[in-house]
Amino acid sequence: MQPDTERFLALVCRELGASEAHIVEGAEGPGPGGGDERKLWSPLAKGGTVVATFDHAPDDPQATLRRLEMLASTFDVGHSDPPPQRRSRPPPARSLRDELEALATRAAAINAFVIDANSPILWGSAQALEDASTLDAVRALPEIAALRKGKHVRCVNGGGAAPLVAHSFAGIYLLVVVFDAPFDELRAERAILDALPRVERLVLALPPHDPDPSEGAGAVAMRRRR
Image (cartoon, rainbow, N blue to C red; front, side):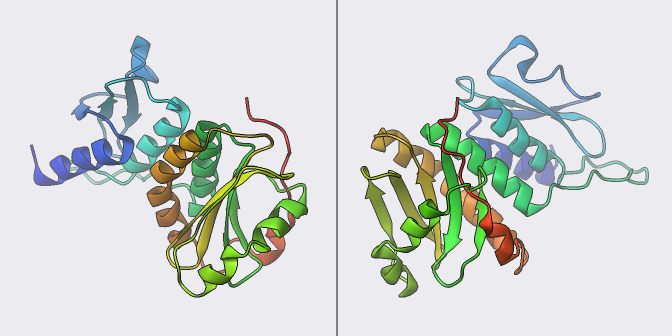
């Protein structure tokens, strides 16, 4: 096996939490698992298919499949023929939204979004913010002052109109997960800590003015995700 292929398969296992990954010849596999819920398939840009195998079926197979497809789109199996036209990678803003949607689902939350301590920009959200009071409440948290000073922030608010958990990352950013009722704090923390490295990577990949500050004026749909 070529070193690049080994590194790619190791990356798939690490990023997705898969127990094994391998490449098979031929076209795309029979969808998520082909009858085996522990397997996910994705075509590679220059032929072949990567298969990720898990010890147990992923909690959110669609979100995990999207991440596998993102990884697969960046890897080329070595061929001597000219490379075909590559599939365009999803823009970071869309990938960030998908990741936040998956996080909200795993945490049984109604929304997840990212803000920073130094501007009015809403960098990404799982759902449109239909009630700006949630965002205002987060920006009014006393912990925001500590975040502006570069300190790590973890905030758990289990009461009030919008119960939430917030974690800081990359110095100035805050990942916020919002609920509409008392929630399982352990489940929320587990989901956040799992998603945080991917969220950080995607936020740092966003262009400086993407999204534009005016796009943060959308607002949360206060309905429990099902």
